[in-house]
Amino acid sequence: MSEKPTISDTDYGHNGLLTIFSQRDIDVQDWCYERLDKERGGITFKLPSAEGEIYLNWGDLYHVKVTFVNTKQTFNEDCLLGDLHLILDRLEQQRKSNIGALRDMIKNAFGEEE
Image (cartoon, rainbow, N blue to C red):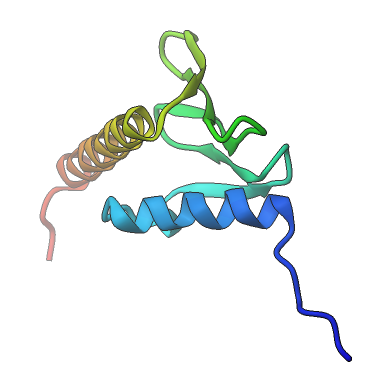
């Protein structure tokens, strides 16, 4: 009799976080991230304006630690799912805004040469 495959604890948190990204219409492939095998799993990430880690802790809360690049201020809290949604949405908004600003800067620097 073969044993049923099990999902490790770190797979549970990591896969759950990727599902949340998908539900929020955030393409995690646009983020610079790596899998994090801390407690129940999650990710570490780097964005143009922030870097940090998000993982599911043993208490079934998401631990969010974000350091903002410009201010060097750190947000380091355990969050409920609704709060995590707001944080992810805001980080994605900032990422898109920074990418747009970089695109415009490059466009202005090089002009629209053809």
